[in-house]
Image (tube, one colour):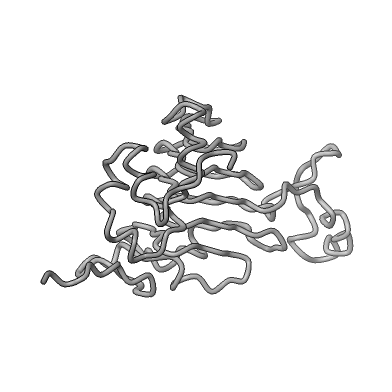
Length: 222
């Protein structure tokens, strides 16, 4: 009898032997302002373990960065958070109070700046090399962010965006099929069941994916 398939371990920091450039983010992050789902990873040949400080910038809170499960983040991905904001309602955007001296007496001018809320990334999102996500953006499940893209607005489920500012190039499926994929939500399956159906998840059709779902997948609208 063949042994039961074994899922990957989501608690291992470096999942690829001999490749310290790849880290799983859930066991890495410590900030209470960052939430990452299981199996999402970041790849960087310089220092992947510095993700929280090198790739999540101006994160002074209270807004959160939320990343779903099974996301693939290419080298140099950057998330800019609301702490990067400057006043734009006066003649100068320069943040004088941050440099100290008596300028710090005017720190109230930097409080209460408008923000866009949490930055939220869905499941199964692929980020290309050196893509950038601006504050408060929401990226749907199954999306692809092209290399070098600067994402300034929300990205729909299974959308492919690229450019600066990023625009929608196309969606990977039509609306009906996207609804089916969201209903089957394979990323929420138990790890053991995912392991049994990796080939279907990676290369099968939607009919096959629905057939493989635990107990049968709900149809959209049910």
